[in-house]
Each structure stands twice: as structure tokens, then as C-alpha cells.
Image (tube, rainbow, N blue to C red; front, side, top):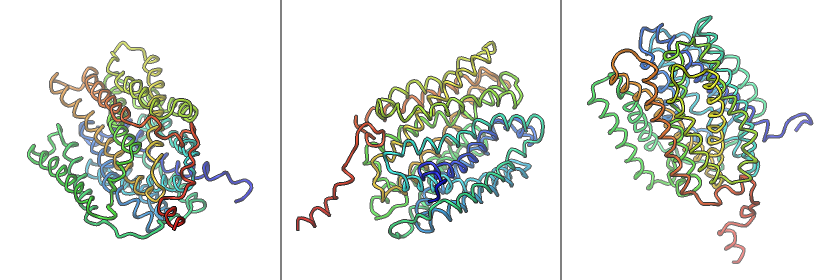
Length: 482
């Protein structure tokens, strides 16, 4: 190590943050520009949710294979390939002129994103001790949150004064930087043992997730007959149920459901999924409400929504001492109520609500949402053995992407139902039931956190020094006694 090189607990998260920056910038920029893109394509802004969900769906479909691919071919090579695919997909998005074209381009981005973030997170988990993990994840997410900070502003500025296509092409220099940094500094981490690829499990999860999410995404849009929609929903659910029983009979399933026997992991994933369903709807609902309900330009709405990411960045420096003082369980339970309240608060906005008040509430909401994200993300890996880290990263990433995709669907369906009930064009009042619905879903996450052990994640939070990892495992102890 050179004298001027930062430690791995800082350097590696910053490199992986380049990938997260691209993803977050891309999603927030696209949400802000949906009305302009819809006008260009001659479609409704609600129809363009397919451009959002197709990306999230592709990520959810291919993430299960990311852990195995990284163990087999090495984290560095897979990480570089993922950034390359994401960058190429961004270029294709900028060249699109119809919904099918932009959806296909987003699918290419999704293939890269499916490997990019999980593999990057795996590098950190295998390179940083658990006692330093909360701080490392803060270093990871702070730079990545710059994407949501500048995304709405940059996207609104480009869409208002230039051409929306440039919002995708700005990923190119970021992608090149990420490839260079990964080549220089990312360690070539591989699995300790080679296992066979679970091809049957991959097919079951791929078509199960694709069917279920496609069916839920199509609800209320009249894109296909209702019989097809329900066939996709129930067919996808049947395949996922089949995988549940199949995975219990194989040695190395592509998604290791035995991880849910770890209480902290189960609480983090299930509670986090419910919370993210509500959060996943916000990037879709907020820009539309500000532009359609208040008549703001994309640039104006971007300058208002970006403050929630500023609140998120401010929280990152508060999370480690807060978790050390109160522990994961108490923080997650209390913050579930606070964060869910701020998810639903736009339902109280009226045409006379001050923009200064809206901006302030969005800032506070971003602070508490980010606290929930950081706490739940770190808790997921608190008690996972090192040998199962790659499987844990795949599992958590699948559930995160599923919840974000479901969030967009819930928000769009709520808008569609309300607009149909009121009749006429989309207006400000049509957004209120949607925000209430996603806020209530986020609140349901508290049920999972209430079931957590009181000492969950004590070692990771720094509240107690745990020495159990220094003790020999039972097999070693038996050999020594023999």
C-alpha cells in the first residue's frame, strides 16, 4: 500500500459509489423527465412507468446469478463488465424514439446494474470487518447520494433548456471513470470453493419474478387483456412457490432461502422490502405531482425534490453514533413511524401549500428515509457467515429491486384508479390517495422489526464487542479434544 492511498474501508466504498452514482443519477433524472419524454413519444406519462419498471425488473431477474458469477469469474472482471453494459445501455436510451426502444435499452442497463451494485457490495463485505461496516456503508452511500441530489436538478435543467436525451449520455464519462478505478483498485475476490450453477433454480426464479412483476406492472394500464395479466401474476407466483420447495432439496440453490433462519437477516429483508415499496413510488409520484398538479417546469420540480437527497446525506454522519447509542431494533422501530409519516405527507399538500414548506418537509423526510435504509442495509449482514456473503448480497438485492418495482406499480395503479373515479385529466387531488397508500405500506415494515431480537446487530453497531468469531467452531473444537 502506498503512503497516500486511503484504507480499503474508505477507498473501496468510494469506487463502488461510482456505480451507485450512475444508477441513482439515472433513475432520478428519468423520473423528472417523464412528462417531456411522454410528449415526445406521444403517450401518457403513466405509460412510461414501463421504462422505470423494465429496468428494475431486469435487475431483479439477473441479480440471483450475480453472486455465483462473481465467485466464479472474480469480482473485478464482473464489476468492470457490469459498468460497461450499463454505460452502453445509457447510450442506447439516449437514441430511443419510442417506448419499445427505451424499454429495450433499459433492459440492457438492467443487466449491467444486476451485477454492478451487488458485486461491488460483496467486495466491501469481504474486505471490511463487521465492526467497521456501518462506517464503510456510510462512505459508500454518501457519494452515491450525490446522484439523487444533482439528478432532479440536472435532469430538469437539461429537459427544460436542452434535450432530454442528454440525461442518459452524461453516464458515459462516469462509467469510464468507474472502469479505470475498478481496474486499479478492486481486488480480484473469488469464491473459496467452486459450486455448480443452479440452472433449474435460475429458470424458476427468472420466469417467476418476470411473470409476477410484469403482471403487477400491467395492472390498470390496459396494455393486455385481463386474462393475460392474471395469468402472468398467478403463473409467476406458482413458479416462485415451486422454487421454494425445490430450493430445500438442493445443496447450493441460486437463492439461499435458509438465510431467513437468521433473525436479523429476515427482519432486515422483509421489513426493508415493505418500506421500499413505499419509497419506490416517490421518484415516480413526486415529479409528476409537482409538474402536473402545480404546473412547474421539470427544472423547477427538480430543484424542489433534490432537497430530500440533501437530507439523506446529512443523516449519513448521524447513523453510526445513533445506532451505537440505541441499537438497531429501537432505531428501526421508532423510525418506521417517522419515515412512513413523511412518505405520506404529500397527501396533505394543496394548491395553496407554500413551496418553502414543501421543500422543508421533503428535506426532513429524506433524512429519516436514509436512516432507515442505512440501518436496514447494514443489519442484513450483521450475523451472516462470511462464506454466505455472496448469497446474502444476491438475496437482499433481489428483494430491494422487487420492492422498488412494486412501489412504482402501486403508485401508478393508485393514480389510475383515482383518476378513473374522478373522471377527466390527471390533477393534484388524484395524487393524494396514492401517497396515503404507499405511506401505509411503508408503515407495515414495523411489524418485521418488532420481531427482531433485542440485541440484533450489537457487534456491528459497536454497542458491544463480540468475541465469538475468535472462538473455534464446533468441528474444530471436537478435533482438538480428540
